[in-house]
Image 1 (cartoon, rainbow, N blue to C red):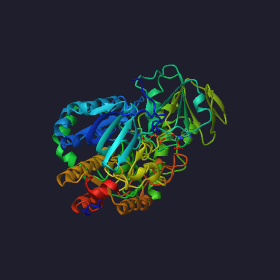
Image 2 (image 1 turned 135 degrees about the vertical axis):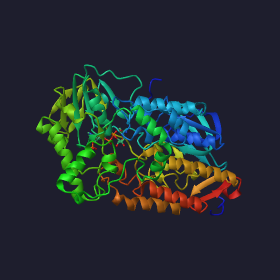
Image 3 (image 1 turned 90 degrees about the horizontal axis):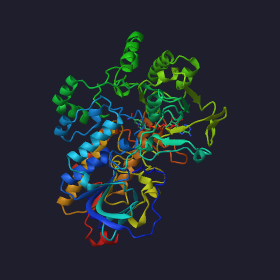
Image 4 (image 1 turned 120 degrees about the horizontal axis):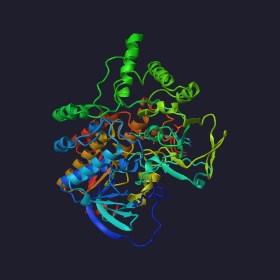
Length: 564
Ligand code: NAP
């Protein structure tokens, strides 16, 4: 440790800018810890903070809990990580009493689960929903954060934890005429609570990422017509979901400890067994049989249990891609449509691979058509529909599956102001600068688990590591009489350089949103951490073993801290 230095109806997320209202905010609460976001990470952080004996409050912009699993309630939305590996593991009782219905749960079940957790651990009375944070300012004189909300309330806290998610700010492309469309318009990431009636409607879906390819087969059967606007084809493979049998439920309960150990030591946070071979170790026949087994395997195991050189060896990856391409050709009856659905510009996992249920089959339906935007780009959205270079089509509903401002989107829009009014969005103007993906220099007592630079893989597992680290840190501060913690700029620089340098080892290509490339004008910087969970864990252990050497710890009563 360095010595103290002395220093309702749904509201839509269209205007997340700091509030302009000058009316003084009403002080609603003053706590040790203020958590922002009632997603999986925020709920866990609230639980841990209360369990550790801190006073804590949580603010959530949505009108219910769930975060991603509140906002993304579009038809077909579901986990593509196994339900029991994505849920909480901190309580064996919770694990035993909640029986997931399917290996990959649907959004309604996930939302029910998160509400159950909130009630089960009596967290709801510490939560305020419908309160969007509009600004958060660090007061150097008191060493506390003042947080204002869209409700006109102010919350004060010693520690501010933004668990605002990496995929929480929906992105709409800036297409001419987008606002002029007179029909219904929905983004998958801000879906209304009232179910959308698709029956007999002419529907357009723009975007074929993980969200688009989930919603498309879910609505194809009820719409009059479905037109899919695809810019980049994706390597989709079957999710292979099914109900969890009573025998499997019993096995899950009996194997809880073993499962936790596997998940807690797995670099990716999944249970999938790792392959012991490279692609060219097998004969052609063996490889084909292996790829068939992969195709039939659940979810992400196509990535985590595939040949060990799949993403590092282009030749190996190309073989897997050719296998998938043949599958697409065998499923989609129209050869031209099949060819349009086969990616030609990237290998498997250069973009985050989606996992699907009945996706390619949908294109055999007479009411479904595919528009290839590489051949015929969108010219404009009209009052009645969408016009491409090939002509205009009219629609009743447009579904925007056009993604998110990944990693930094929410944090950069919250009006975070650190020392001397430093704006987080300015500090991150060239890309995020973090240490462990939890803190930034110049922002004392501010943490952002589940933000950029953390790891990669099954999110709740490594975001949970960050929450445990933050909570342990707060306890350690309290035990030793400190109340202010701020990462050293040198350590922020070290972690950020590690992330930047490691980007070359990432399977994801620079054209993926993991580099910010889907948002016009966003700096092209890697937003995950190629070192993954092992690197994060190793560094956390080092920090704790070295008595928080990477941080400056102080007391707000120290004169130099108060005037810094
Ligand atoms: P996404 O992967 O970023 O996909 C956005 C889609 O919109 C892409 O097909 C993109 O095309 C297209 N697009 C963007 N701008 C466009 C424009 N101007 N014109 C036409 N098309 C445009 O977003 P997402 O599908 O919402 O998924 C984001 C992430 O959320 C996933 O990768 C995953 O991590 C998570 N997610 C998870 C699940 C799950 O199963 N658990 C489900 C949904 C989402 P280009 O590729 O050409 O840019």
